[in-house]
Amino acid sequence: MIVFRDPSEVPADFGPSVVAIGKFDGVHAGHRAVIDRARIDASDGARVVAVTFDRNPLSILRPEKCPPDVIGPHQKLELLERAGVDATLLLTFDEELAVIPADEFVLAVLVEALQARTVLVGRDFRFGAGGAGGPDLLVRMGAEHGFRVDVVDDVRAVHADRRVSSTWIREALSAGDVATAARLLGRAPSVWGEVVHGLKRGRELGYPTANLSPDLEGFVPADGVYAGWLVDVDGARRISYPAAISVGTNPTFDDVHARQVEAYVIDETGLDLYGHHVEVRFVERVREMTAFDGIDALLVQMADDVERARAILR
View 1 (cartoon, one colour):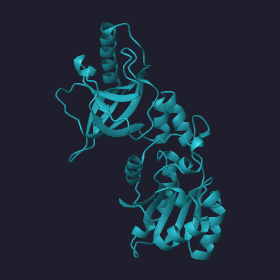
View 2 (cartoon, rainbow, N blue to C red; view 1 turned 90 degrees about the vertical axis):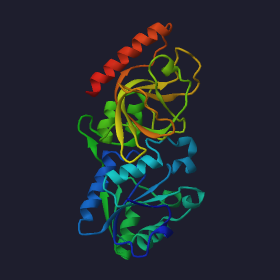
View 3 (tube, helix red, strand yellow; view 1 turned 60 degrees about the horizontal axis):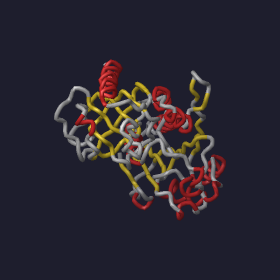
View 4 (cartoon, rainbow, N blue to C red; view 1 turned 30 degrees about the vertical axis):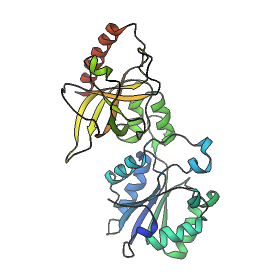
C-alpha cells in the first residue's frame, strides 16, 4: 500500500480513485463496510484510497472531550492495507488543517490530488473548519466537479441491535471483554510496541516476560491476565507465539507505578525479543488482577494462568 502524508505527495497521474474518508479508529466492521463498498466501486481499475488522520481531530479541537485511540497510526496503516486499500493519505491533523474550510479541503484533496470519481463516507461524517462539511456538501460539490457521493449506512450488531462504533469497542475493552471487542473489530484487539527491559521479576520467578514500552499503540484492556498471541513483526516473516498476557501494575509487589503489558510466551525458552517490535493480541480474559499473599501463592496462580491460556489457545 502506498502512503502519502500530504496531498502534494500524490503524483499528478495518480487518479482516478475511489475515496473513503473517515477517522477509521479501529478499522472495525463498520469501517470495513465502507472500504468494501469502495473496492466494489473501483473494480474497473480505479484505485481505492483511504483519507484519514494521524490522530483524533478532537485532540486538537476539544482535547478535554477526546477519547483514547483504539489503534495508533502504525496499526491503522497496517489494517487499512489488510482491508484492501491501495493507498492511504494520512493527514497530520493540526491547527493549520483544522481551519481549512470544507470546500477548500474537497478541492485540494478530492478533486485536485486524488481525482476522485466516487467518495464514500459514513452518514455522520463531518469535516472542514467548524465541522461545516458533511455528506450534503460533498453531494453538491460532486455534482459540480464530477464525482459521485455514496453515503454508507451504519453497521449494526445483530446480537445487540447497536451501531458498531469505536465507542462501543472502548467500552468492551475497558471492561476486559476482549471477546465482544473482537466481534466488533472482526479480529482480536491488540496493542503494538517495542519490547523493553523491565524489572526481570518474571524471569526470576521462572516466567520471563516480554515487556512492552509504555508508549505502545492501541487501547490497553482492563487490568487482568489474558490468553492471546505475541506476534514478532520484525524480521523477514512474522512469527506468532501463544502467550499468557498480564496487564496492570503487579499489585503483589507494589513497586510498579504505571500500567504495563507483559507477555509470557508459552513453552519457549531462550527467546530474546529485546528491541523487537511486537503485536500483542488479546483472545480471552483469564482472570482479574489480584494481589497475592506472598510469592508462593502467586507462583501457584501463575502456573494455573499459563495452563488456562494454553487450553484456550489450542
